[in-house]
Image (cartoon, rainbow, N blue to C red; front, top):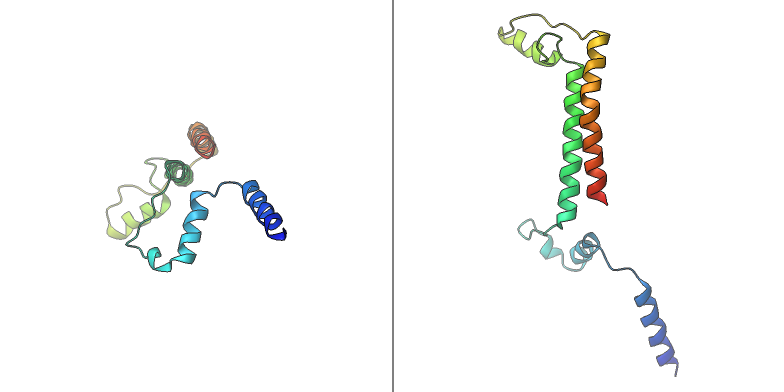
Length: 127
């Protein structure tokens, strides 16, 4: 009699659990079968995970471009580090000119829409 009650309790408990995510399944497989975790055994990611990663990478890329644009030369847009490389190799054609406050505002406004679009794309990929 106790066995039937225990079986019913286990069945009810397991039925109340949510379905495992692909990441949870991958981790359980890695623990149970470490030999399958070698790099030669690639785990196939879901399209949703791939889309989220690509959206995150795109957002990071746009933010990096914005950061570089804010530190770029007023005349050519090349960052200060790029001008230093040009100077060290003797290929620079002019000296670095820092952005004025007005230029910084223009750059920020131009990247504001790009960053907002990338953030929206990331949110929709997570949904």
